[in-house]
Amino acid sequence: MTLSTERTGALARPASALLAGCLALGACDPGRGELPDEVEVTNVIASSSSGFIMEGCASVIYRLHPATANKVTKQGLAFFERVESLRKSDRYSDWKETPILGAEAKHILALRAIRGCEKTEEEPSARAIREALQTRGSFYAITDNREGMIFVAPRANLAAFFYLG
Image (tube, rainbow, N blue to C red; front, side, top):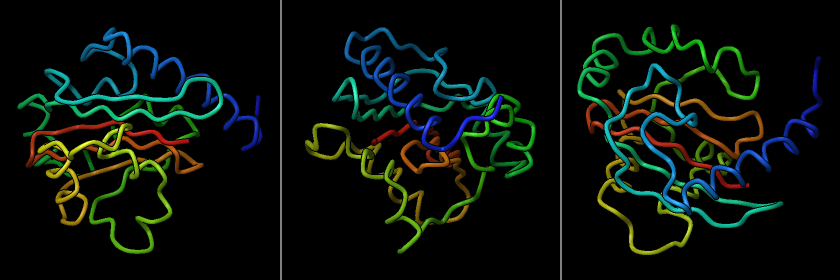
């Protein structure tokens, strides 16, 4: 079954609302589904969410498992070629390597959620992600509507999921 972009975007809103509820209740753990299974994490470092039904924001930053960080550092993009869970979804782009600079960054709505959804003082982990976005060696996949993003920064031992839409 093929869904139009408009229909796919409509389906993403309830999913983001569920994630926001999960975060608000503190029910998310390192084994949850916003990251591919192959991207192993040890714990949540920072998270925030807002909105619920039609519009929402989710920002979750994880500590990347050291074994995964080592694999990603050694294998680079080749590591992500074996990430089956996103390949099965047509919602995400192929994995790309950073940097993300200038005009390209402005068009990725999810990047606006890096500081968190409450726009409070930036966490040190969020600063590390901003730095990793501007240099080579980190990797990301974005949703077709640019509202969602999965980010892996092996040198900083961080992984993240951002959503704003």
